[in-house]
Amino acid sequence: MPLQAIYCLFELPIDENEEEKEKEDLIYGTKRLDIKVDDEDDLRNVEILTSDYKNIVGAKLDGGFEDYFELMIKKHEVQGRPISDGDDIILLNSFDGAEAIKSKDNKSSVISFSSQIFSTNQIQEKKVAAGSSFNILTWLQVIGKETIDLLKIMGSDFFTARKKILEGSLTIPSCPNSKLWCYDVHDGKMHYELTQHSKWNRKYCPNLLCYCQKGDGLKSNHTCELMTRDDNKWYVAQSKAVWDRNETSHDELKHRDWADAENWGVTHFGVSPEEYPLDTLRYDTFHMSCSIL
Ligand SMILES: [Zn+2]
Image 1 (cartoon, rainbow, N blue to C red):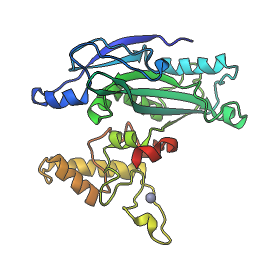
Image 2: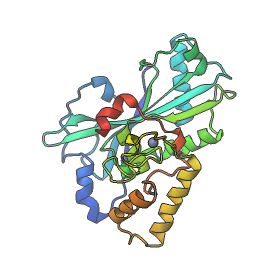
Image 3: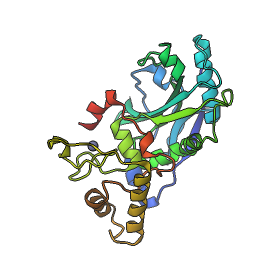
């Protein structure tokens, strides 16, 4: 089924003083960009519409997540391996930025937001191959770099939907009796940007998912303790409380230093743990080696 895309401009609220900075973050020339795309299919739904760098340019599949679910269900039907109502269904979401466009002066990036579903039965019956890309649905592509400001704006509908999926109030319309298991499987760079956790080059707590401090893994008899969803919420709240009490002087860098040394690397600058709980994140290990090193 051909993807029907609508072309959108998304307003990005910016401080006038931040214009120069934003100019670097978003990549529009004064005229239509000279597009060079490595993979034509990747960008067939993206059109450059404006020379105004205050807008985010991208292409969004019409509808909301319930519509995307139905498109993904149809993809399986077309392939002759339908998902039945009542099947346990796994939803994997993957966002990734790629340098795909080059203007005359700039390297530009496109962030793709994609999801796929499959049922546990399909895996057990070996009807879905792990490497298959057929059932991946890219529902949004945006021109810009992977920054938390941009991701929060562009991902806001998704994160609201994700929260409802986790609560069970958003289901697949044609499979109302199916249980949905939702995981985000971005590469390391994207996970760190979305969570705003201490980066991997920091001194004390660069590990996103666990309590290991830097170097702990090298100690003999080391065991890794994962951080729970509730603990993560608590540390996010603690970060906000310290910020609100002005203990780190509302200085972002100073606050990040504090979080790294005293808050297990957790800050409150990222997507909220209600929308993006720590225990539903998984690393895309095929990407991780090149993203983190
Ligand atoms: Zn660990």
